Figure 1: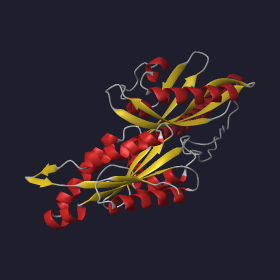
Figure 2: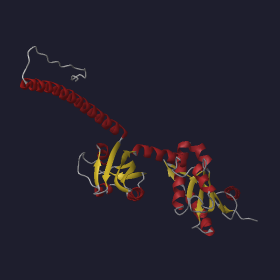
Figure 3: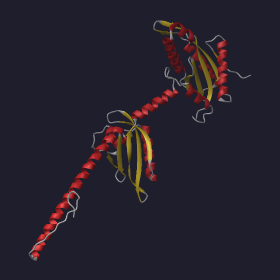
Figure 4: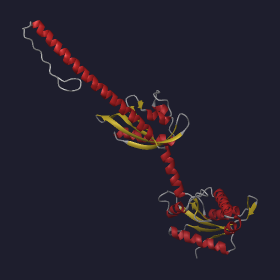
Length: 345
């Protein structure tokens, strides 16, 4: 026998006089009552400790989940009923503890994310495997968020009966990654593709990676840009670059890529949808568009553009760039503010 604190107890009954059987039974009952009370007290103490520990762990879990923006979800496949922790309710901006169902939840998914998630979920259920997707949702309050959704299937006799997993708000992580990717691939000043992205596209001449072949390359140099910087300063020069980039973009609505590849140097990659004559007409359009005067801050700026054109008639990406560069120098040699096309001998 042990006490409420877990220490062993010894109960001894002794009497000099003999007692009746009834008294013996009564004393035995008393002993049982004492030991029972001690056992109940001990168990009650342990239960209270466990309950306090469980409550502590639950609070810690809730705090950790809130910090990590994580929630746990579960779906009973027999009836489609859902169970969420507070983190999932908060992610969708639905009042905690509200009644939920799959249709209401699915309505929050962006279309492409819903299609991808449903396909991954169906495959996991069919094969009793796990899945993970990145999905975009619109909360019940209209906020756009990104979440990482993971799921695991529980099966009985090879049949999926339950699916459960985690949903985590990764909006900040996703936006940061997108911003980092944008800065790595785009020119900050003009918003055009930068030299790195241009080179990646140019190297995929046959479209093996992107599925779209490159048919031609136009190299554009701004004429008179150095004089603008020298006369009016770099601030106005920057405005000229932005304006040139905007006009260039407006001319090139059906090309593969428009890029800024140097200080006042731009490039355009055309796809198979443009015939050689279309590409040469585009070069003339670019010369006319950039040649229009720019009025800014009371200043009238005269710019021009020299354009070199090369068609993809075979060879490497370096060959195509070299041909376009030769055509560009021919345009500059012809007096600038014009275009020239590389013609093989």
